[in-house]
Image (tube, rainbow over all chains, first blue to last red; front, side, top):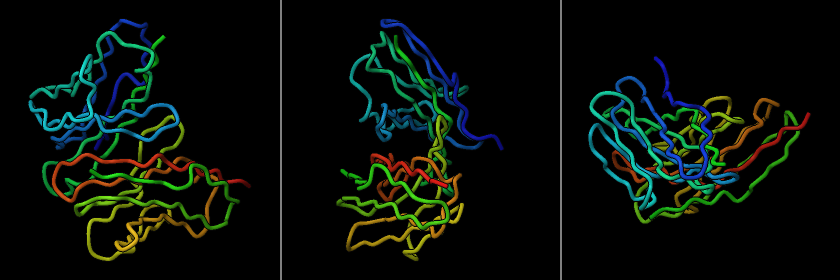
Length: 115
Length: 114
């Protein structure tokens, strides 16, 4: 049973470009969470999605950031017009719809560097 | 809203010595508590969790933690560390209900010395 997959693992963008981060949850998991880890800090919640629905986006910056989890395919975190302050590690986590729903399983992260 | 405080940002410890990582939280509702470990340039791996029941929780790799409701603490312990335990450790809480976000502490970096 493969774990949470994220790609790319490393992403370099210049200021003003777009960054697309992908997350494939564990098999059977329908809940996806995105977190951001700034250098030397803990993880901060960004958004919680279920298939085709955004459930909680209280941690998302108001501008330039968006997330989706379509019926088919991975969850996407999209950052438009990146700035240097967006440089961070972005982690995706997933949890099942029932059973151990309280436990989130993390992917390896995407490390975004904005030049 | 919840918050998590990890009182020690770095903990150096000698191999085979015990280690305790402190975690305090604040919340107005019932919470679930978690400890995760992060090895360099990797994702987070769940060490253990407290949902309900016995306040002493045993996890992987010989770690255990004790939930103390009166002190709002969830300290992590290991009686004898290995070099391979060098990593960053994160305490996290979530509301005791379905599909809730995790609130993380700032992390404690453990450096095990030979």
